[in-house]
Length: 216
Image (cartoon, helix red, strand yellow):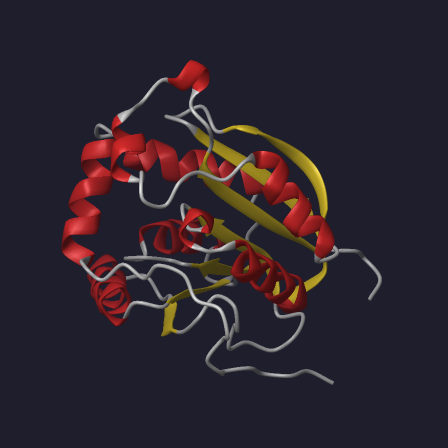
């Protein structure tokens, strides 16, 4: 039996609403390498044609749209974000790109999807916006919506080396960074097993790739 949830979570994080400004900022911070960044992330999670993908905290939908191109016509991609403005812009970008992605406005801590629906769940540059309790709730929800053997890719800002301050540090000083050990711990508490982790190779970004047990 599957369940579908769409309730307001008890713990919330920071919600970004300036969708157009967000796209501009990401472009500036990535120094024109945003496309390479997206492709690097999708290579880490090893998307296959026909897979079902969920992008949690999808923002303006750029990564979800790229994921749809990887999984092809037989695959499906959904994106969810707490900001209506982000979802509206994501919808417009998908239509303009001629790509079918289902975007929803909702909370990461209470995903409005049935159990065991997705092969892959992505969450990128979002965990630092959430307090730890909310991260734990998100991890449990990601585990719930994953199929047995499904994969989670979590990407976020790590600590800078030797106290070095980058442009990303100054922009995110209010929200902080997430230690890779903390991401691994939160995923482990939810029943997800880390199989790979390390530096993304761009800026101060780090990743954790985890899998759901094959037997429910």
